[in-house]
Image 1 (tube, each protein chain N blue to C red):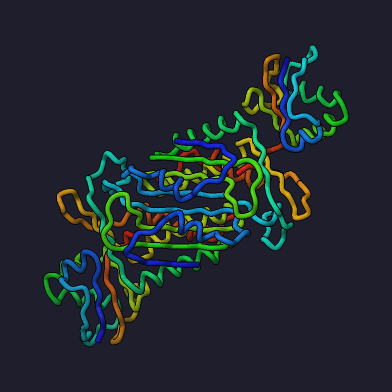
Image 2 (image 1 turned 90 degrees about the vertical axis):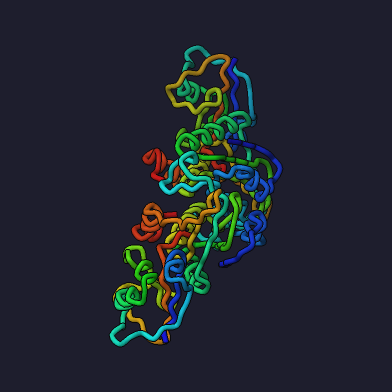
Length: 165
Length: 165
Length: 84
Length: 84
């Protein structure tokens, strides 16, 4: 189990390799990376529907952020039998194409790894104290609004405490 | 969209980086890697429950394999709006810790990437003509039996043709 | 003294990221605090005008309207989170 | 001639990975083929003794018992798949 909150970027291949390195009980490794897009998309529309973005800046609440991420990770490890898990979340200014967040889970079984990975990103989205401000091509800044669909995605896991493997 | 069936291993970091490289519409990149474990686990039990394995050999049906994988990938792209997708499946002899299969999906939206990734591995497991033979520490070979849980995982997607994003 | 933190657009309105305040007598819960803060000025009133858009953490734990606040606490006010 | 392919443990029993056979008169479907093959020898009988464990592809498409087989086809017999 590992949580990191950092300004600098990360090497996805290296992070994933480290997660299962030397552990021959790992049969499945699931991961999700969130990246900065070059358009905003408040309604979940297609790329063509949004406004061009030059950058994204993430602010967070140091201390509470780590605490919440560690709690979310611990909950995933309680619900699923994981060999390893990792959350890396960046803050600061990022340009389109840069990674914002990585969640990854390794397990003996694929279903546990995949479900735990989905759980981590869903809960993180509604629980971890980060806020995004988008910067348009004109240099204008705009705080991103929370999305109901993220609340709904997180709420699924309240109804389904432990999925069948 | 890309499908590869190959004997040699692959570099996970490089494969994933290539998937979203230069495409600033990608907001989420989900992946799953299946690896050879050092124990068999026919009933989905804990690592402690299985027999020690020295290696795994995958046989496949050249021609039909590629055809089925391409069809599964096309179906994922039909069901979800993906910016990119990739299936790499190995055949031949592999030792514990080696990757067997990689599925990865990139999308503007996280939910599409995650669901499509789960769909790819679930369908591949029951549709692609691969067969595993396990090699115990004593050098004995034993064909792996198909699991009902894999059939059930694949069948979910018949009831849920397109999930909400 | 109670430490107050403001994040994201709340901070833009209050004009401060953090401050130490002496809670007036009678301010004993998160709800009390949210009702009192707007009286401190136009920026605070603006930041807190829509309570449905405000989340509160007391000592780095999410808190609800009825949860207690007291001297020595760290109370953070922010919009719904948008990380990930 | 019809091309027959055997995979995984079926191949171990039949002793061959592929062969060209002349289908006898009356063998027109996958079901006919599965009923006829065991008569070709003990290895074939053993390979096909449990039909629930046999999957069939005709010209690289999954096929069912009633699907046609004919001269020129490639018919593959194998156990349920276990890749991934």
